[in-house]
Image (tube, rainbow, N blue to C red; front, top):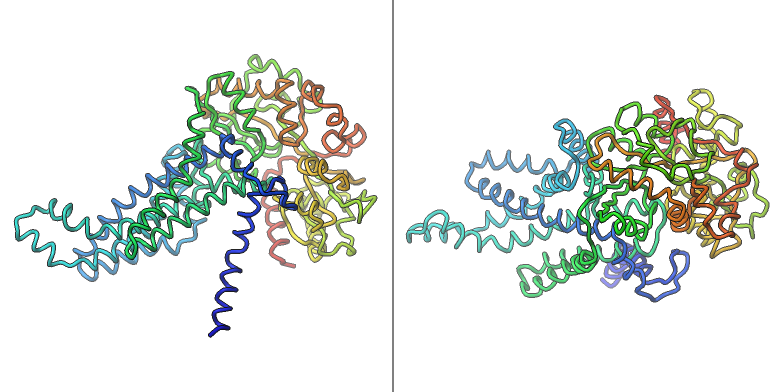
Length: 600
């Protein structure tokens, strides 16, 4: 018996230790998870000043509350209707309610996106609420149905015999008897809604980013204590709500207290942050995560009197699919160079009015009039960086070639980015091929390089490669320059190298969709971020390089001379931009899927 109890305890520890580790990390003074310098509440306090994150939490509360109310109304009606039907009707209806429970969420999300797009319904908070109602309705139905079928029919009959109308019977007899089931179903629905990422990521549009979507997108750039703090709050709230569900019948008072505490954990920071918000006009941004500081957004809001709604995405493919599939309602988006071409071909970008962009003249000539948009007709450059090799110089000094990532000495201590374009570019550079190739024979050779390298790779990870290098978990990592530049401040032994074979240059641009509802304000924002002072601030806060010559001139001298952020003229000549692949994009995606799935 003791051995079985030990197994139970061990299983529970295995289940909850990762979550507890995340909660502990949220109290660390250090920004990086490689070290714990705590304890501190600094990251919880920073949440209040992170406007986009607070708005995401507010959206989660709005969606969860409205979806729960609608679900309870529909599920109660359906449960009562199932009691009135025949056995055959009940069996068939219940089997239909079971179907959403076994449908994969990704299928649910894709089908809803196609449905809303076909009906020309703009994506936003409304579509998120509708989606949450649809996927959580079945859960609530079965909880309430169980309570409905346990109701004593003689009590309702007695009420009718005493002259009560059907409405009075429902309000004074049926509803009070259903109350425990309704509360349990409501708490379950709210918990499902507040935690959902997959379906929400498909159907969210301007102003519709919820907390899980925001947190997940941040993980693509780094695992900061702010993410851990927000995740800990979300975890604490949902745990208390589920506890309230479990106690609803046995200890109703304790259940109410747990429910109030869970809702307060989410609502209190939102109320505090809301008290600081202002603005009558609205601007809807759709950027990579961590690509603009809350302070920069606040300065734009103060200058224009506008309110900025920041939504974030975790991949260029997500941006492309969202823009091509529907009308998400964004005013400014941030496509990489290779995504501009398909967006321009699809006619979803608006031509820029250069007369409203006087600060465009302060941009470095290296980033204007380029092949991806020669006259800058549809876009302006925003930030740029390089994909190179981060290394622990104490163990691997003198790294100067991509072949270092094929060295068997570092088996299990090599990290690669989880990105198809970056992986194929690595293989192409090793072989001296074009990283933007669409030639099938060249791709077959690249595939062999990646397959042969796979046993040496510890992980494919685009989120925490900086932490992995800093902690010593890996010695070599294919890395993006901006995040390595940040950790080099704390770890001078980390090196970032542009290999002899060359490296990839990525440029992220700002563009205004044709469907943007606030094009005038969007032009104001584009010009704002090109101002020298603001461009320098964005560079310092994101860690990525600014294309603004005026902004670079205002940076501290040690930043201007940092060759991770601003490579030498000779190194710049070695860089190759990502290009639009057209139909060959499917070949790259298939190759990467085969490599990761281990197919030979």
